[in-house]
Amino acid sequence: MTLDHPVVSALLPVVFLIFIGFVAGRAGLVRGEAVRDLSNLVFLVLTQALLFRTMATSHVEELDFKPVMQYFLVAGTLFFIMLAVYGGNSRASVMALAGIFSNTLMIGVPLVGLAYGQAGQVLLFTLISLHALILLSIATLVLELQVAREQAAQSGQAQPIWRTVGSAIKNAIVHPVPLPILVGIAYSFTGWGLHPVIDKPLVLLGNAFGPLALVLVGITLSQTPVGQQWKNALRLSLVKTVLHPILMAGVGWLLGLRGLQLGVMVLAAALPIGANVFLFSQRYRKEEDMITAAVAVSTAVAVVTISAVLAMLPLLAA
Image (cartoon, rainbow, N blue to C red; front, side, top):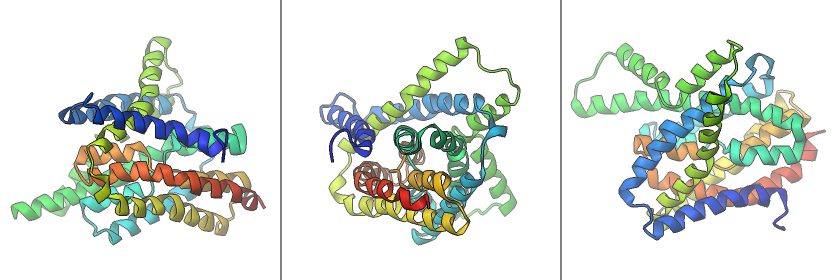
């Protein structure tokens, strides 16, 4: 497999950015106490710009949602299965999210472009437009409910279930991820577009999200005892890059999807764990070391698994 191979050329930049962050962390260029501040910068500033602009400039009414809904049906089912397997607590929510949340932007866009061209990318962008909104909102709502339940158990003061659910829904909506997406969707229906004075800064901030998030993964990785986490990280990586696409292919085939639609959804499911999961774990301080290791391990494993998926894509076109 050469450096010009589509899988390698898409994944190597991701690996290189994580490596740069790892070296910077080991060299002491970024102090351990600054990681939380960098995480907040990415999560609360760069992510906001990227998500708002993506949805504000989209044409939601023109998108094909049938294959995308099938994608979320499989991902949602796998999320709740993993949630039960890992114990149904707040820690399990982060682990389950890692098993279904793909790096659709930095790796998915170039790979789908190489495999299916512009038609495939349009379908992938439809998925991307809802990817964070649906998956992170589900994970946030479930986790907020679990956190409220765990806090009530510790304090011995259980509040009424309707109040717990109401608080969880509010926290899931007024949240750094779903809120800019919802605001962006609402703005897109105005038809006003974004003035260059507003649009250009949003583009610059959004473009900085992917590289800085991956460098941050590397910095955290340099301070994480990966040797203690590699087995769990590998297990989670195989769920994401092997089990997820197999389920996507099987369910899609049974539901009648074929060709480009099924191929793009399976390829998206086979992608490694997205950096948003790392930021999610950082924000809630759940399984930070394990998720950091899993993002790196799944990116390496994906070199093999995505190559296998690309080799099988012609069979899905039948």
